Each structure stands twice: as C-alpha cells, then as structure tokens.
Image (cartoon, rainbow, N blue to C red):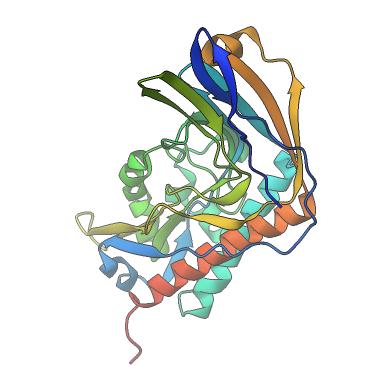
Length: 321
C-alpha cells in the first residue's frame, strides 16, 4: 500500500507551472518491522580495542526525527509531523539500545563497565552532560531538507553536549575527552549514536523552456540517516598514548523498502504566517504512526546496528592465546 505523498497535481502560480504534493490518508495493516540492513566501515586505530580488556559505553543517544519539511523554493511546501511517540517512549528505547549493545559486546568477549561504576568514576562524572539527558533541536541533516528531532540518551549512557551535530565533526573532536575515564576505568570508550528517519520528504524546483516547476513530496519510509556514526577512543597508561577512530555507514541508501504502518492525514491545520512566508503555498500534514509497530521498527534498527557494530569490533579484539 503506497504512502506516496505527491501526485504532482499541476497548479498555476503567477504564471509558473508548479506541483503541490497531495497526500493520501490511508491506514496500513500492521506488519512486522521491515528489514533494515546496515553495513559499517571502520576508520582510525583498531588498536584501541587491544589496549583495554573491557568497554565503557560512555553515551548512546538516538536522534528521533519527528517532523520533516519539504520546501520547493518558497513556492510550495509541506510540513509533516510524526504523531504518536512520546518523550517517555523515546527515552525507554534509547535505554534498550544501550543494554542491547552491552549484551552483544559481552558475547564477543568485550565486557562492559557496569553503569554504576561508570557513573561513579570521577573522570567521567566531571564531564558535562545535557540536563535532563535529552534535548529538542532542528536543522538540515542532508539535502532532504530541514528536520525537527528529539535526541535522548539513557541514565546509564547519558547525553553529552557535543552530541547532535549535523556533520559529525563535533562528536569526532569530543570523543578524545573521554580518555581520562578510559585510563582510570581500564576500558575503551565507545559512543554510538543513531539518527532515525520516518519519511523521504523533500522539495525541488526545476526550470525549463516553458517555465519553472516546483514540487514537494516523498514517502513514509523508515530508516537510518547517514549520520549514524559510532566513535571510540582509548587512553593509554601515559597521557600521550591515545588511540581513536570510528565506524560509519557504507553508502547513503539506508531506508527500509517497507512502509511504516499508520494513518496519513492531510491539511490538519492552517499554516502559520511564518510558514506560509517561507513556503508560499504551504500545507501541514500529520502521520499518526501505529505505535506498536513503530516500537518494533526502532528495535529492529538498533539491533541491526548493534549487531553490525559488534561484528566489526570482534575483528579488532586481541586474538585468544
């Protein structure tokens, strides 16, 4: 069942040909979470995993995208919101993701520092953390357009201020700040973070001999954003001994081919003057997700990611004997 958001219905705007996305409000039958295959590549120093006998999951936030904007040159546009997930839902799933990774690391022979020991460590405790362990933010993550998100960690792997950039540069710079804790805990620091998308909403403007065409649309499809990186770092016995690196997804097509179940509603409210000014012919739509299905899709995402992460790490561990 299609959740295509556009029909490219022609409009005439100031003498220019334009197409405004017109969603279909449909309810999909709930089904199992679609396959979310992901492949990671490693960069940096694999030797970090040979420096210590265990790992510290120093942070593990998930960035849940909850609103998407498609703006076609200020002529037409859609603002699409995801209705259903609460802050409590997202916090709980972030905690699940951290615990799932800890279990997978233990299974490959890399036990994790217990949360109580990590949180009590003076070097780790001294590092700044986001009040409340979560934050709302917005930005342009890629050419798909502007997004609004809720980003949260868990009490066992708290959110740090440097996490949440749209390029990964802040996280890459900050992972080394965990090295004092890495030394005192005798553990390599691991810091994954996922960005989960719910649509492919985007906009474009094309010019031709007959004028310009503006289009905004997409589909309700679940998956990872390419910014779903993991960073790691280890501090050696001396302050000059530091080894770090990261894992990044291969390719940019990280979206499940199956549709996320739920109800798509068009024109749920009038656009604000500010939205109309930015988009021109604007509309606000809402996707009321099937919450039972959504939780399983998120679980499928973090399980697939953690499994691939563990698969890469096991090859970097010291050989037995």
